[in-house]
Length: 244
Ligand code: FPP
Picture 1 (cartoon, helix red, strand yellow):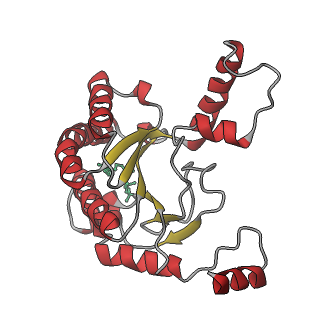
Picture 2: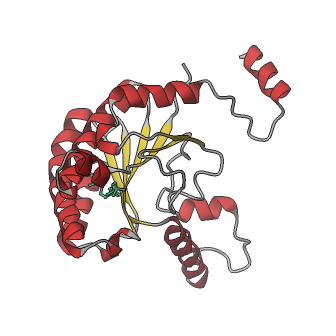
Picture 3: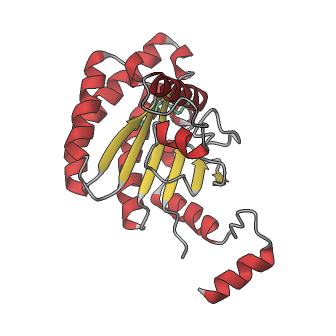
């Protein structure tokens, strides 16, 4: 089976899943966070090397303040317990997004976790926190401008695609091969717009906390059956596959 090297997931439907069980939305987030751990473990067992999850978007601040506080507390605890899980699974964790707007103790936990796990050679797990793709690209362009002003990049050097990629939060991480969105919405919601230029999409009606290991296998099987052409003709791809 052709297993994707990198899967990106839009975790959607925590609230609806909780509602369907007569529970508060925060219960959905708690169970959603637990499911992230299960899927991380199984992804690595399946041969997936990179997993990137959308935990909190730049737009999510507009939710009711008690829900935002509950999510932040959940993430606070998650980032602390994640050190133990990462050690067990040899997981290398990186947070993408604008960390400067997060509470100082969360920023510190992120720095500690990234430092502690930086040399682990298991799953590369990226958590998108206060993340928005347009914001990430804008920050990347401003970093390039600052480096040009400081002389680190020659003033007359043209801006290239590689230069932009290297200044994104995902620098050094291969682009996702497969993007999964749960819970029935069929849009990207400002997630990894640059990185998903050639990514295959998989949408399912299952809410995130109910997205089981079997559902992950279903998504990977579906991906595995697709032909990725990257601009080539179908005949070219077929003859290349025969020659492998
Ligand atoms: C998605 O469901 C939930 C979020 C985008 C917010 C928080 C995500 C988590 C707590 C998952 C945990 C992640 C990590 C890495 C610990 P929703 O609230 O948008 O659901 P709805 O669309 O049904 O309202």
